[in-house]
Image (tube, rainbow, N blue to C red; front, side, top):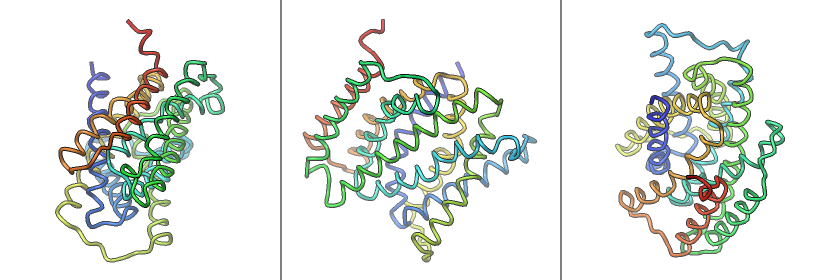
Length: 290
């Protein structure tokens, strides 16, 4: 029961996170917003662990796991934040939904498992057709929209690779999800802060009410609670079942974007989204399930 509730919680968080990321850019630069988000989540999580008497980080024993998990935060989330500046939140969620296909491709080099069955190769071909519909639609992509698409594809590679690597290491060591989440944040923060200072430059921070609300939501739910729940699922479910979550969240995220942020969905984007969701259905073999 706890696993099922956690699964639903992650779906809700992932469906609302893209729009929250977009809103956080109301007055904050992407890397600044992401760095503050992870720093606040790490501070809050550490405080909770200290007050609750939970064990801290065991860097000498588990540093490989922390490093593997941190990739899903940096540089992965940095790419997502930058992409959200040029494409809609619904499209961010939709492109992120391609991660199960990348998981199938990367499973062999990372886990030594061959997941590229003919059905999944066919699914990748359908997904590429859906992606083409989106890329060649000028109404969906603005002037810099292509950059956002490329950034999201790069994010898929990093996120899927991180999930597979974490799954592999989890088979060798018993680490609690809370420790994994805090370890990932601790290892991601130096890269984030260095990128903020040297890559984008420190500028005076301006906090609008929208940015503050989004930052708090992303820190508490999107990062702390969301990542603890995510690593809990990785530990207790098959990685392919966990990677199914992005199949569900894009539709929810697109609807939320239209209702809350007046985002526009073109016919080509709907066609592309339909093909990508069909590809994910083929990938998972839905028609064979009873």
